[in-house]
Length: 427
Ligand code: SDX
Image (cartoon, rainbow, N blue to C red; front, side, top):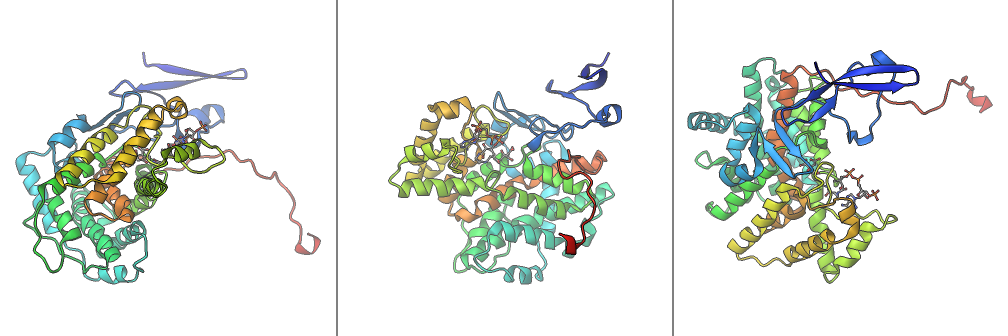
């Protein structure tokens, strides 16, 4: 007998099936709620509402667990490469050696971006925020890849996926070089996916590109840690835009814009700016803690708190450890890291944060590593988008393959009741 939930309202009783996920999560299936009762639910921010059943990523916010397709984030960050995780998230399994080689070959074959796209990049002022440039360039890619819009077969879906996995890093590199006033650089087919990203971003016109294993490993790990996170704001955006059967690139462009917000992916930039402000303020963390707790002050401790994690964000733990390793290996002594650790210690001992279960999230330490790698602060959220690309693709693909209906929430109207029109001369 399947589980049921009963809703009692006035003299009526309504029954709804309860579904159980593979990790024993329970959900009340209210697909028939309005038909049965004439009522809807309301849940600002969807804090208690599931939008879909998904087989891609599992989070346990209470236990601080994160798994991609069943593999723990700790294992993947330690043992996998980012391109393997890209394949895992999108196609559901870790690739065999042959599958990985074929996937990489297909990506290399699609890694050029139409030269005409540079005219669009040239149209932006140098002061443009890289996230706005990236969202625009991603949308502009549609015009140069029209057959990646309607993906009605597995073959078309695979071709569109390979195209964006191959071209997105070029757009990311272009946004950075535009910002830094450097000439655009082409990729090198002999390099690995992440080495190529680093080369396109950093190779100086006057020098040969030299690999740095510490930097490449750090970048690879950071991209893995950002690769997917179930139904977060930007992924839900990608899904709902895709649910209207808008193309993959258009859906990704919308996701980039959602990620840009400082409450979401934009937090990594806001964290660094906050830490730099604290440093400029003589390291006075107590002042910023007080501001974060002051309800009359809009300031929030950026990089702290999470909708799902009410325990440590497992990614933050891994990134914090990596920050120490990378800065040591690169011989960098960044006072900002000490300020971040001091702030974390204070917050974890502060009743306000303890009561609200506010822990460091993925954005709290990531910027310290990006900074050590020479990435400008305004590019931090672009790096988040680069990592999140495979997750967005995997979630979009799952939504389309499951033939999910167009996303169209209802509302409770609280405006004016009917009233007669008043001609302007009588108003
Ligand atoms: C990401 O969803 C995901 O999975 C996202 C992400 C991903 O991988 O995709 O993990 C990436 O976006 C991480 C979060 C990055 N954002 C920040 O670091 C910005 C700072 N954090 C917050 O703004 C906040 O914690 C959110 C947005 C992350 C979560 O907000 P919620 O779940 O809506 O919680 P809330 O705003 O209702 O806060 C609950 C309470 C409130 O206090 P009370 O009204 O109960 O007194 O906690 C307080 C908030 O004021 N609070 C904070 C705080 N975060 C929450 N107070 C001070 N500083 C903070 N950072």
